[in-house]
Each structure stands twice: as structure tokens, then as C-alpha cells.
Amino acid sequence: MWYYKDGETEIGPVSTDELKTLLREKKINGRTLTKSSKGTVWKPLAERVKKKTKTTQAKPPEPVQPPPQVKEQIKAVPPPPVKEKPKSQNAAKRKKLPFSFTGNGSEYFKIWIVNIVLSALTLGIYSAWAKVRRKQYFYGNTRVDDASFSYLANPVTILKGRVIVFIGFVLYSLVNQFYPLAGMVLLVVMLPLLPWFIVRALAFNARNSATRNIRFTFHGTYGEAAKVYLLLPLLVPFTLGFIFPYIYYRQQEFLVEKSSYGTTGFVFNAQSGDYYKIFLKLLLPFIGIIIAGVIADHFFSAASILFTVVFYLYAMAYISVRSSNLLYNSSKLSYHGFDSTMEVMEYIGIVFTNTLATVLTVGLFYPFAQVRAYRYRIEHLSLVAVGDLDQFIADEKSQVSALGDEAAEFMDFDFGL
Image 1 (cartoon, rainbow, N blue to C red):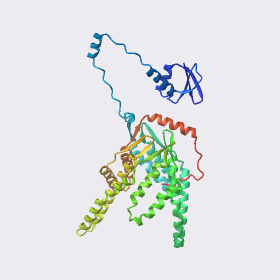
Image 2 (image 1 turned 90 degrees about the vertical axis):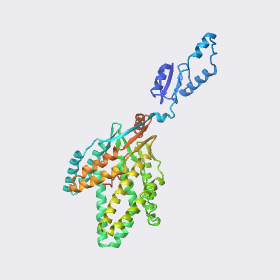
Image 3 (image 1 turned 180 degrees about the horizontal axis):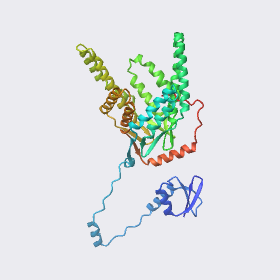
């Protein structure tokens, strides 16, 4: 009979068979302390198994020689086939869990039109509640592995942030109107606040986003945000814009690696060269559009504008799709990954038809366009789970519960729209 420890609790006695069952069910592991009913020394289970195996191998039984006629029969029987072990244990457990979106344009249109009307009637005050309703709809209808997402923000908190932004904008406008020089000085003074606004908004949005009762967190600092959103962009004119892909890469890295799900941080494996490849592949079409526009301008002056608009739509769709795919495919959460499979031409088709339909309906198609674009992105995204996802979630819940709920920050604002 055996005893084992669960934390500081001593459990037993249990039989050897019961101990094996607990091990198979992962209720205990090799590090679990055990002792026999007759012993007094606690040892990890793995050491006992290892010791027993060595003892068994040290004294192998002497082979019994069968009679000559039995030997011949044994030779005639072919040995059983040996099963090949999988090359990777993780590969055998890898499974792709696709994201899905269960909402539709008609449902969201009702939310959207009510948000528009109430925001107008309340002179924008209701816009904070409108944001919460919009995000709750999209989050609540986004699912992966039979679990949906939740948006938990308080509209009053959002309203506080918007009031601060509104007051600041009004003060700046008044100063700039009557004292233009003072307005320029005020703008320069306020510019260093931009990274702080960004960090606060990202932290607020992450803290109020959750799935499976576990919240996301963002722990980026002002100094880190200032480097990628303020200092690096100052180098754009000195590098003739060639530093822009690197800046974009650093901003994406900042967003991913400073985010966590519960207590587990995300990891970003992309390189700056990956972003340069995305932008450099636009260089040849850009040169072609310029040449075609110059030639067409001699025959039809509006042709250059048309070429510019077409290239702009293509460039925006191309960068959005390629950078989104790279962002997800290069991100990992512990040993779990993501797989994004959006296609440029498919996305261009959605953007073009959405734009055309929105213009023809004088804006009424806009909520349907939002749902179409969001559905395409979500339904081309999968979570690549390696190992037991349920065990990972259970471990996160245990760790988050042990840490307890963090106290709300004194300056808890949301500055995003």
C-alpha cells in the first residue's frame, strides 16, 4: 500500500493499481511525493519507478532452452510487426480549432441604427454605451472551440475618457484660434502624451476582454510605447520613408509581446525582414501604376485619378491581408499557435462590393459591410492547439484565481473610439 501528497495533504493508503490509475488520469505525476505504508521516507514517484526498473533489469531471468523440435517451430513463426513511434508527440496531439462568427448583418443593423439615433439625440453622450453594445455583439458572436468572447467594459468609464479628450480638444482649438503661436507650442507639449494615451487604451481594452472566464491583460509601459510610436516615426523623413516597415514591425511586436491571456504572455516570432518583403512587393505595381497613369493622362486626364484610386484600394487590401496573416501566423500563446489564411483578391472583392453597396444605399449598408469584413477575417483564422487545450485553460484559471483580482487603477480611462 502507498501514500502520496497533494500539496501538503497526505492521502492514502492506496494500492499500486490505484496509484497507476491516478497517474494515467494525470491527477499525480512523476514529481508527486510517495512513500510505502511501511516506510518513512517520502520520494518522488519517478525515482521509485526508475529504481524498480533498474532492479528488474539488473537480474534478468535465465532463458529456458526449448527442445530442438520446438526451436524449429519457433523459427517458422514470423515476429510480430513493430509499431513505429510517432516522430513528435506534439505533432500527434496538434489540432486546428477554427474561429467562427454567428452574427449577421440584419441583427447588427438594428443595434447600429439605435446607436446612431441615441448618440445624436444625446449629443454624443450615448456613444460610450454604443461602443459597449457594438463590441459585446461582435465579441459574443465570435467563438472558438465552443467558447465565445466577452467584452466587460463599463460605459461610464469610457465616457470619462471621451470627456477628457473632448475638453482637451476644445481648449486646444480655442488657444489655436486666438493665439496660433501658443497653439503650436501646446501641440508640441501635448505630443509626448500620445504614447500614454495608447498604452492606457490598449490596457483598458485587454482588461475588459475575456474568454472562458479568463481576462486578457496588456502590460506595456510608457517608455516602450514612446520608442515605437513617437521616437522611431521621427526618423521617417531622414530615411526617406525606408524605415517605415521596421517601425510597423516594432509596433506589432509591442502589441503582441506585451499582451497576455491570464498569466501566459504571447510570443511574436516575426522578423523585420518579413515586413520589408510585404512592402517591397508593392514597389513594382506602384512603379507600373505611375507609368500607366502618366501615359493615360495624355489621353484622358481623369485616368490618372482612377489609376491612383485603384492602386490605393489594392495597396490597402494587400497590406491589411499580408500583415494580418503574418501577425497571427507568427504569434504563439505558450505552445499554441494561430493560422490565418486570408487571400488578397478575395478580400479586395469584399472591400469593393462593400464600398459600392454602402455608396448606393447612402450608408445604410455600412453595418452589413462591417459584418461581412469581420466574418471573412474571423472565419479564415484558426487556433492551432498543441496538446491538451482544456488542461491549459484549467491551469490558467488556477493561476489567475490564486493571484486574485487586481484592484482597478485610479486613472482607468478608455480613449479609443
